[in-house]
Image: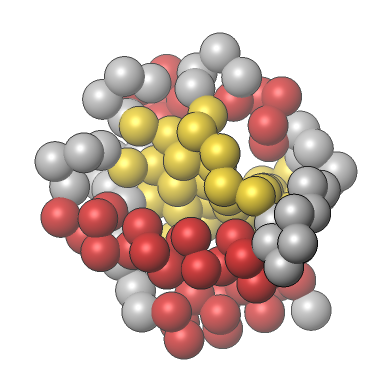
Length: 112
């Protein structure tokens, strides 16, 4: 895990080409399927950035407009869609935008 000063996790852009390598990590990985035109995706972007500074995890943003294969592999039909991986295994998924306290509850349930 990258650690830069008070930064705990990391926020990266992922693509169809590196999706498997990113999600097969032995770390916690939260994948955010999003698109530039998606209003709810824009609403949760600051929350995800905040989470990357608070939690030891990688947050991988996948733009579905230019990376449709990864979304299709998981049957993503609506965005934002969030998939949580640990040790290369899909742990849970969540669809739609939610406020930060709900993100924290969802992540705490799995990461505790």
